[in-house]
Amino acid sequence: MHERIEAFLRDVLCYQGKNSGAVREGVQHLLTAYEKQIRDAENDPRRALPAAQRFRKLCRDRVVEEIQQRTAIPSISHFQTVLSVIDTSASE
Image 1: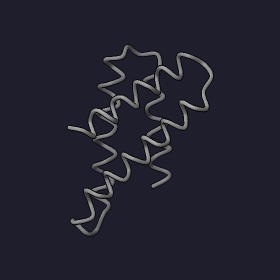
Image 2: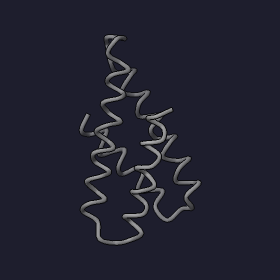
Image 3: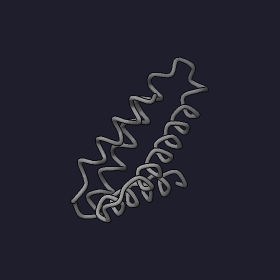
């Protein structure tokens, strides 16, 4: 799963510098796609949803780590937007 988390992080970086609406839409699309991959890879259907939820939490933790490590305001702002999308879509 670690590889997918890092791939997700690389993919969200592609949206850096875009307007916030594009970032939000792109990150939501990426989350949906990666979570589907996680669910589809799970052999036991009862474990598919918990695996996708665990992936989301690990992505969130990784984004928080990036925010803490960054020093450039645009990068921090970008990852805060990404974090907002992760948090908002988790509560839906």
